[in-house]
Amino acid sequence: GDRCSAPPVDVLRALRFPSLPDGVRRARGICPADVAYRVARPAQLSAPTRQLFPGGFPKDFSLLTVVRTRPGLQAPLLTLYSAQGVRQLGLELGRPIRFLYEDQTGRPQPAAQPVFRGLSLADGKWHRVAVAVKGQSVTLIVDCKKRVTRPLPRSARPVLDTHGVIIFGARILDEEVFEGDVQELAVVPGVQAAYESCEQKELECEGGQRERPQNQQPHRAQRSPKQQPSRLHRPQNQEPQRQVREPGEPPSAAHPREGRHPVISPP
Image 1 (cartoon, rainbow, N blue to C red):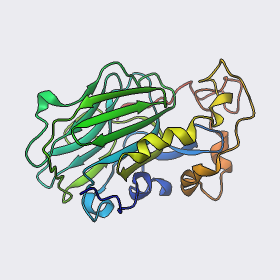
Image 2: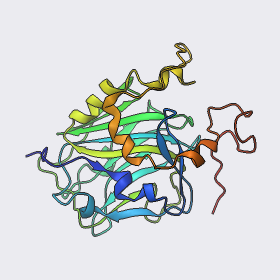
Image 3: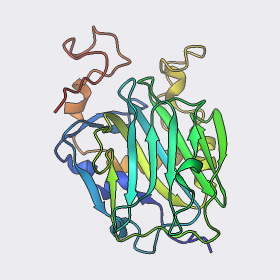
């Protein structure tokens, strides 16, 4: 059955983002008080899968992320490989959004992999993304507004091998890499978390952000008490990151020299 007893997995923590490995630095998150991580080349962020999922990978699960990519980016966010190097699970951001899944029987076949064509994450803005995988379908919820379900014709008892590696932002033998900011990345057994993530976050600080111009309430910055988990990533000393100018700010702010978007030079 579903391993609902298993705890949620904080992928950013498991891949040691808070210790700022090479290619990762702190940035401001979706709300002014939130901490995110800016990822650039040559970030190498991976771990043995069984370190994150000692009890196996859940059959039905939620994948939650709060993310902002470089505009126009088409790249993997998270990829799970078997010990043989088979790509068993992945979320690819951009336009379109792709969800990759291949169980121990090789299902779904490549032609049946879910593609979400009507949805784009390539605009360079912050997005909340929740993926709910249950039975033979996968539902993608973007910004708590757009919800699209696609068939996921996997076997009745799908198994993902946890003896391989889980990689953030890159794929083996692939040029495309993630470039942008990530505030949250978690895998939670069961699909409840994917649907509940919106109930908690709808009325948060976005009212005062440029994403919601029709409803300008500048003082929505206080966090809801339910939002505790992102405090895990908050460093003790937050001063240095306050200097970073984010894409939403006018050039007159803090550091005029930084471009409007994270500019990442090729390797």
